[in-house]
Length: 194
Image (tube, rainbow, N blue to C red; front, side):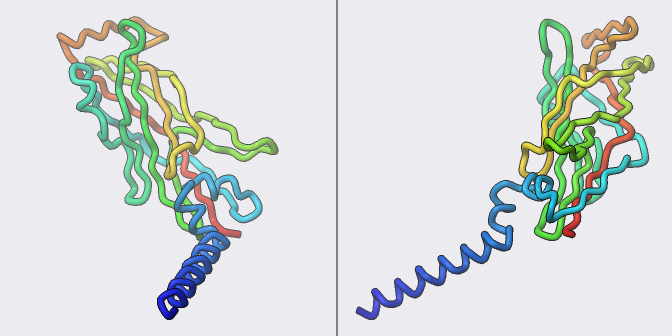
């Protein structure tokens, strides 16, 4: 009889704790991450602005997997790193970057290649980044290949084609497999509780 009573008390206690965590937003935040804050227009204020500086990563086209995890940007709380480098089609190289920020009930931050601006219908993905690549001393503009919304618990992803579109540059990985990617005008997003 006493064991049944203790179990009921424990079960009720756990239920109360779960309800408190859910009502405070903490549990939902732990499950879904940063997007919970980003979508809460009533509860959080968003400040988005460009980050000063130019950030670079050297990509080895002869060993695509070796690039995964190379850090492009790190301010101690937010990071952008190489998620994947791959070949699309026969010879078009692409690099995908992954942003990783911080989130807690008081607010969140993430630095990205995309500006996640709020609109009446949700969010837009605006790419303000100035992106260039340098191969064998020849620099050229590179263009976005894709991006995601805040689909990860702590950020998003965005990518670039590494082959030039505006000029003739012959990428020969037998001759030189290293290409340097430089990004500037990244975007800081800061959400603060109202």
